[in-house]
Every structure is written in structure tokens, then in C-alpha cells.
Length: 156
Image (cartoon, rainbow, N blue to C red; front, side):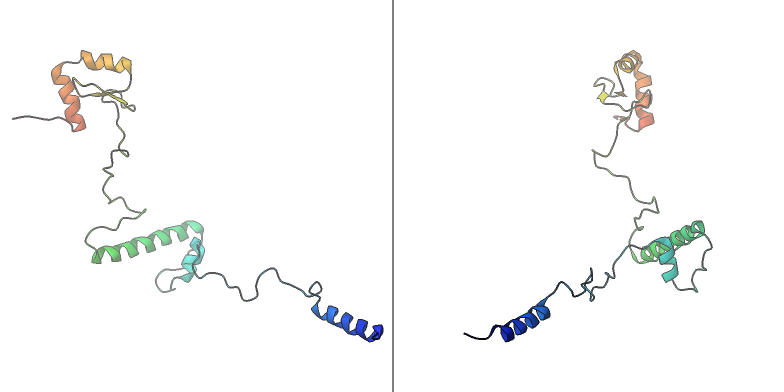
């Protein structure tokens, strides 16, 4: 039978060497780096711009104004090389949507949302009360409402 004392001693040394409970483990991998692509706030964007192009603003309102100026200048440069205006959230030069789901219909009489259309006069109306008014209108009045809406058709 082999002696127990030397075996226990070497066994204990091996256990101490492989024990991971006493080694400090950081929460994050030490080689981890944040992504280069991240969202920046106005101050960070303005601090990253070259100092010669825009002076450093003193408050957040001036910073936002300077940022909108940067965006407009960038869009202007894009528009010079593009065929049409650049569509962004800062301009309104884009055409309205022609998709039928995006177009809301409004009553020709009241201006409220109009879920109904009179087949006889082709006027849009909001409810039963307005429908009575639409039916009591003369032919020329209904056509003038259609003309104001841009739906008046003149046949030659």
C-alpha cells in the first residue's frame, strides 16, 4: 500500500492550483471594445466636427441649430449630384403619398372625416344629417363643392 501523506499533499497542491473560485473574474471580457457604430447625441456630433467649420455653441439650442445647419449643408451637397431633391426629415420637398390607404377622405360640407360618398352627387359626407343637406343641394352647388375639392369633371 502506498503512503497516504505524500499523495494527499500532491493532491491538495493540484486542487489549489485548479481552484477557480479564488481567481478574480471581471464581469466583461478584458479584450472587449465597444462598437464603432453607435448613436451620438448633439454634443458629441458637434465636438467631432472640425473646429474651423462651425464655432462651438454655448447652449443646447445653439447646438441643435448648428446640427440642423450641418444636415442641410450635407443634403445640399447630395442634391447637387443627385437628379432630384434629397428626401429627409428636415425638408418637405418630397411628393405626397399616392397610396390609397394613406389618403383620408373628408366631408365636403363639414370637413370631418367622411366614411360615406353619395353616388348621385359624388359628394363625401360625414353622417346622416349631412347626407340630408347634400341631397337638398342644387345641381350647381354640388358641382361647385366638387370643383373646390378638385374632383369636378367637365365633359365636352
